[in-house]
Image (tube, rainbow, N blue to C red; front, side, top):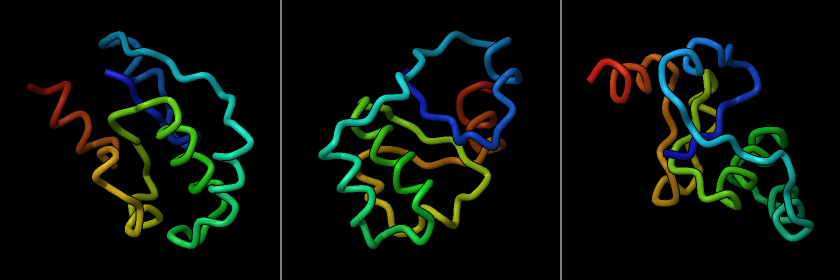
Amino acid sequence: MRLFIDTNIIVEYIEHRQQYDSVPIGISRTDMLNAVFNHDFNDLEDSFQFQTAAQNRCGTIITINIDDYKNADRSRMEILTPSAFVEKYINE
């Protein structure tokens, strides 16, 4: 499972319980421009995070700012709060 974890989340909680692929920080110039001009996001940081996760074929973004992704293309990946992620994948 590939995840993109919002920078505001304390990742140690998840890292000590299950191994996940990490995502490189890099983003292509094309995806960077897509993020800048993507009007689905009010916050540029969230747009960059979404584009980086999409470029790296992540299946899930974990964020405490779930409302910031309300217009994101959810057919590309799940967008979950930390508690929803834990409930769905860790407390199986």
